[in-house]
Structures are given as C-alpha cells and as structure tokens.
Length: 448
Ligand code: GLU
Image 1: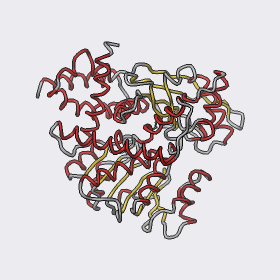
Image 2: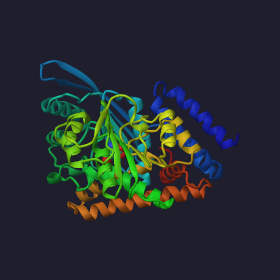
Image 3: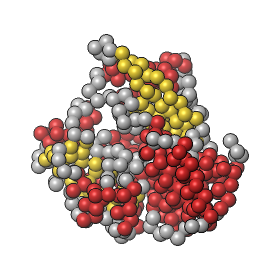
Image 4: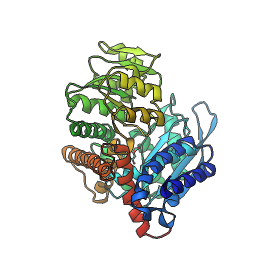
C-alpha cells in the first residue's frame, strides 16, 4: 500500500467513528476518497494543511425544530436541516429535500457530493444541502404552505444571496419554493430574489430551470455516447422515477430520437414499449399529483407493475432518476445481461457500490450523478446571474448555456480521467476535476 493510500484509509476509519450511523455519508466519502488516492500519489501536496480532513467536515450544520399544524388541528414536529458544507468557491448552493427518509447522514451525503458537482460546473458556487423529514405525500396545499412557512421561519436566519442559496430537490418544487420565498420576503422585508432558485418565472425564476436536470442528464449521455461512437437516435432508454428530473429526461431523450421504455414511482413501474406520452405524464404527475398507475389508465399500450423491477427491462441506456441506492448489484447485473451499455445518473448516488462494481467489470460507460445531473444546479447558478443583473434570458439562450456546460462537464471528466491514466473512468475524472478546483481554492485561502 502506498503512503497516500495508507493516509487516506486511516483518515476514513476516523471519519467512520466520528460520524457513526450515517451510512450514506460514508458511502459518498468512500467513493471520493478512492479517487483521491490516485491524485495523492501524483500530487501529494493535496494532503497538506489538513485539506482532506477539512473537506470532509462541514463548515456549519444547522438542525432545527419545525412545528406545524395539520388540517385536523393536530400539532406535528418535523426536523429541519441545513448543512453548509463548503464555501471556498462561492455561496453554499444546493437543494432542500422533504422526504420521511431525511436525516443528518442523508443531508451530509448530498451536501458533500454537491461540493464537487458544483465545482465541476465551473460556476462560482459552494456546496450545501438541507431539508426535512416532513412527508408531503397526501398533504393538502394548506398543510404544505404552513409547513414551508414554519421551515423558513428558522432557515431565513442562515441563508442569503451571498451566503447560502437553497433550491428544490425531492419533495420540493416550484410550489414549495414559492411558499418559502413568500415567507422569506415577509420576515426580512426584502425582495431578495437571489436567495432561492427554482422560483416562478414572474418573480425572478429562470427559464429552463425546471427542465435543466433532466435535459442536462440527457445532454451528458449524448456526449458520452458520442465519445464511444453511438447516439440516442433509435436507442431504448429506461428512466426510473417520474418526478421533475425523470419527466424532462424522458422528454429530451425522446426529442433526440430515443424510445423511453419505462418509468416508475414509489408505487411501482410502467412499461411503455412504444414510448412515453410526455404531456400525459406531466399532467398526471405535475398537475394532478397522482401515481403512475393513473398514467396507465389513460395511455395506449402501457402496463403497470408492482412486482419485479424496472431494471429487468431490455434497453441500451439506463438513466436512474429516482433516488439514492435504487440500483443494487443484482439490478446492475440484470441491466448488463439485458444489453444496457450506458448509464447516467439523474438522481444523486442512485447506484450502490456493488452496482458500480458490476458496471466497471462489464465495461459499461457510466456517468456519475456529480457530472450527469449537474445541469440543475448549473442552471440555478444561471438564475443567480440573472437575479444579480436584474435580467431574464430567453429559453434558447439559457438552454444553450446549459448544453454548453454539460459538454464541458463531460470533457473535464473525460480529460481528467485520461490525465491520471484511467481513460473512460468518468467517476474518477469527475471526482478529481471537482476536487482540484475546490482544493486549490482552499489551499489559497488558508486554514479555515
Ligand atoms: N437538488 C439539485 C441537485 O441535487 C439542485 C440544487 C440547486 O439547484 O441548487 O443538484
């Protein structure tokens, strides 16, 4: 074992003890540290000044009580989080997730990944993440609004245009951002539009932000396929999930000539051998907020399944766009057996380490979430630019900027992997390219 490897292993063992009970955080750190061993053996100065230790310790973590009253008069107490992980490159930036699975370890894994993702975009944004274990499922609009207001009543002290700029994630879309922005404005008596991204178009939002993560994931996939002499035209694509990321990944993949053969939600999955009717899917999920089985009732030739797995379908490309650890080692093996050659992560960390191992062993071209789903936060940074200059750009121009950013992200990941002698390993390339920029900034800014 090299000195660098030994140093990293020792540090990782300490991290496991100091952050007990946070398996997702351990998983996210392990993946990055693995890539950093390669960097440290070439550029050992990156281990100086406690850099790696500082990178893995959030600058600040806020945990707070969020009391709210349901329509039936009961009082509920949820837990709120904001982890401000790293601001070396810019204000903390990252989404808010409202989901019953949320805990500190989940927010820390998301915040940690966000540092490298945001760095990789080339835009001036640091990394953070937040959310709550509040479960929005089945709640009325009034309940959602009161929850968002209570959440922001504490969060507003910790955020700001130049400090920390939250956005959406699972369970937080345009409606929730609206309620939170309203409460922020009321509490601060300021129309500080740059404090949140994902806003409505008439009050500081950016065109393309809604579509950006899904479109970006497909732009990344197209670049990766091009690199290996392929394209999306005529390809069969599986897209898991049916939220904001999935819907626009489906739309863009089909626009580029692919057939999307399946999508899903937490109730089951839908087989769509003839492709997806995007308008209907949007109507079911965005307007009616219904389950995917409703889509099947109204679509031609689609079937709903609540047994088996969406990963059993035959396809050329898989875009996991639902949630963390949704692809097990067995699922990955099934995908390989069924002909999948490209995987790009629209969600954050949807592939388990076992799945990644299977993809590696079988030569699957794999775009990690940090790179493939960075289009969402990149477009958030474009929203911040528009807010700062009190301007609003056209759809075409913003989409062009997104497309260009995704091409650059792919190039940086590919070139960095090659530079370190691991051609085609986009995980390694994305981790190292993201890391180097943050690390250089941290070294320049002293021990803080
Ligand atoms: N939640 C998204 C992500 O995982 C977007 C964050 C943002 O726009 O700030 O990157």
